[in-house]
Picture 1: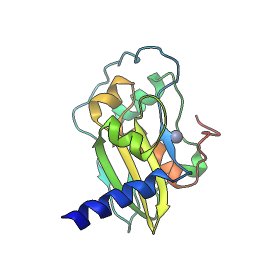
Picture 2: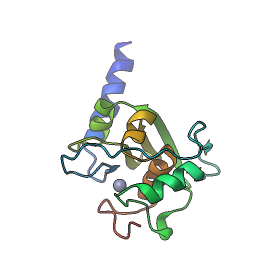
Picture 3: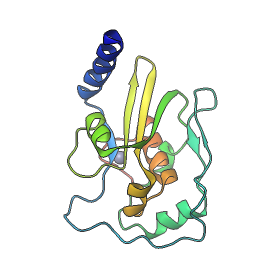
Amino acid sequence: MRVGRALGLGVWAALLVLTAISCVTPPKAAAPPMPVVASPTLEAPPAIATGSRAGLWVTLEPPDLWALVTTAEKQYPPVEFDHPYPGKVVLIEGASQEALHVLCPLPGAILGCAVPKRDGVSTIAIADEKTIRTWGWTRGLILRHEIAHLNGWPPNHLGAR
Ligand SMILES: [Zn+2]
């Protein structure tokens, strides 16, 4: 039990020292979250493929495309980074803000976070659906954003569209 806990803490400590961390964060202004405009279908999250063989990817569905055109903050990756990530990824869904801040030590709300490969495995963590929707994003958009970071899209979001 102690060994397991120590190993767990070691992993988090290793993650803390990472320098190449990229996250989706809402605008830094103290403005309240954007109102969410209802889209035609919000019930089913888009299907996602996890694992290393086919790569991590998610297909954008109508609710994702709706959010893409209605969000004020344009943080969608450029085409050269918008493709499946071929490596192994640990995907953490529904992460709390506390967990996201441990993984990506940035100020403010964090919707998603990508930690490039460590020991052959990269990590993506995304916030819970309610938090993501509060900011006008979708799970699919967050994943495409974070996957692009694993594909080499720089943290400054150069070329975001
Ligand atoms: Zn980002």
